[in-house]
Amino acid sequence: MLTSVQKRIYLSPPHMSGNEVNFINEAFMTNWIAPLGPNVDGFEKEIAEYAGVSDAVAVNSGTSAIHLALILLGVEKGDTVFCSSLTFVASANPILYQGAVPVFIDSERDTWNMSPDALERALIEAGLRGKLPKAVIVVNLYGQSAKMKEIITLCNMFGVPVVEDAAESLGSKYYGKKSGSFGEFAIYSFNGNKIITTSGGGMLISNNTEALKKARFFATQARDQAVHYQHSRRGYNYRLSNILAGVGRAQLQVLDERVALRRAVFERYVKELRYVPGLSFMPELEGTHSNRWLTALIVAEEEAGITSEALLESLASENIEARPVWKPLHLQPLFRSSLYYPHNELENVSEDLFRQGICLPSGSNLTEEDQMRIVNCIKRSLSIKV
Ligand SMILES: *Cc1c(COP(=O)(O)O)cnc(C)c1O
Image (tube, rainbow, N blue to C red; front, side, top):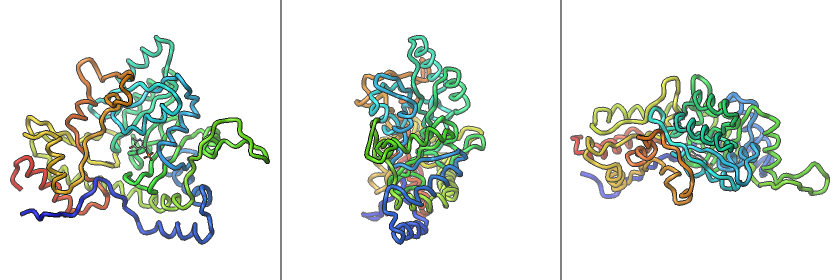
């Protein structure tokens, strides 16, 4: 029998280590209550070291980090920027902030990320029109790296820089190198639902230290070198608070543990559900190591005997927070008039994934007992004996 009110299980709740308060206390004791200070400097240095890049700039969100990357790449009104379609809207909103025009690229099935085939067609056509994009924003969905080798080779051929949206893939690896170390610029997010969090925050990283110096300038109202307050460029107030950077430093200390825990959550789902007809898990590309930020799977209606929507409703009725896969951006009313390149003539992969894909609760603090509640609810919904 089910009890009438069961404790809510969240999709991806914050998971503090306990050490965060020490960094916060230190900030209070030394009165560094500002969008600069030792925790900001420390957090930047530690993230750059972790990612294996030369520098990092701490900002107040992943979205502002993407915005700064586009500014540094000279994206302006009327320019084109390519972007993965299967992603959260934050990947593309900064394109609009610059008055630029997004073009959306479909996914492929091996990674659910940007299809190199679709990207190639889009680049060739853009080249023929004489208007190549100023940047390509590549997303690493739910922790899985995109096919970076193929994508970067193509972008290099056309001389177009890559911005790696690694908001969901901090701690993941691609052929031994950290996710986020591939693009000209990459970004991480420390929003409340991400693998580590500062409640809200982000990081812009790169090997181009000169460009990152400019990023700090644009993120602090673009103040010129002068004693008086003088400004020649449009600036922003995007820096991260020294208190929140302290939370980030403590979270970063346990990041690799969090990756191991999320992967263990994924493995338990696989163990319990692998023989259930109609369910298939998001793949992990050979040579990559996903942080498994969210466990995502496909519900094939024919074999499962249930739609992904009905399964989500069933989970919701038992106070379990599961979600559909991101709605592709080319299907969003906001981007109605945008150009879109499907994987090929026959396959529209992101739309298939959206129709059938769901994300299960995947917190690194999810207990085995709670996870079994989810597993059993899924089995019951598919009329499998538990
Ligand atoms: C969370 C997220 C962002 C934005 O990060 P914020 O810190 O919330 O601004 C960008 N892209 C993707 C893919 C995300 O999941």
